[in-house]
Image 1: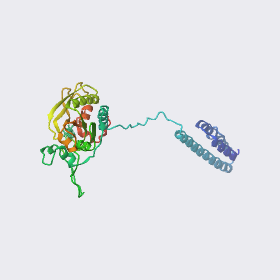
Image 2: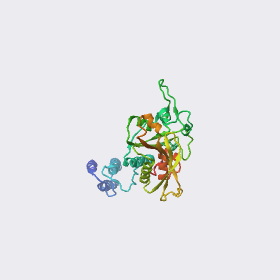
Image 3: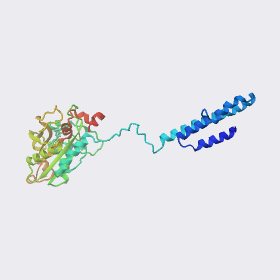
Image 4: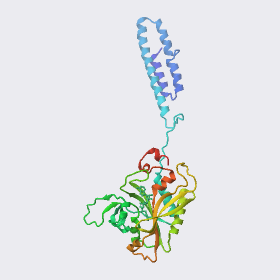
Length: 339
Ligand code: FA5
């Protein structure tokens, strides 16, 4: 038997093989019990010892070569198979797609601003770093005024030499009332959403940083009834149900009269803890004080207006049944994933 011929033939054939079933046929033909090589081994016993040893060694080397050719080819075919680009193993568990979503405060801010926009309000933005003048003095709260205690302030150390007014992180969005009126003429209606900061101890309903939406509508014959009608419409739109609104007298130096606005949901919410008979305070408001109009040069006998400052977290807490304001900025993924 010509072992060299056998070797050449086997090498040729294996190089053309493209799948595992052809490879199995090759294995049976060249390495199986009835293969030419096996029969050759059987026939060796008849040969003289020296010849047996010589041919045996040669045949053994060929068998080892065939075994390694077979092993390599099989590995090659299996690797190609599992990594081929068009192969999809449908038995593998799918990869979970992580869907991003909006923060609850972004959701509620969008809801509230959308509602006011539907009622013709424009959205204005103001600076988070304010002067003492706009945050306090221009709003009838001079340094000596006891009402300053209502707004615990984070002051900013400034190195600017010619600076007339001290700098602070705004404690409310109300400074935008005077800022806007200084450069715009009535009639107008605006809202100012934004961050506010207070130097306060935090608890379940107070944060050091929170959001307000300031509102200001100035025109002829504007009254608190206009304000009530607008707020009733907005809260109905936000909570998607009938909501009762009530005013309680309150004091803010930049409005007269001043009120606190409470709401009461008519339908039961999902949260059993939240009683529908409960009045919940959502904002401070009132008729713009004539001093502010005088400060910006508006004729007080012609123009009237209302202003309000809405606590955004407060609305989100009612709508989404959140019982601790500190959750909003906790970055707790278990909380955030619920929205
Ligand atoms: C004011 O800040 C007034 N500027 C509101 C105003 C505007 C009155 C225009 C009249 C005219 P007050 O301090 O009550 O008012 O805050 C208004 C709302 O902001 C509160 O009802 C509450 O919802 C929210 N708020 C106040 N302090 C905090 C705090 N530390 N954490 C979270 N929300 C707060």
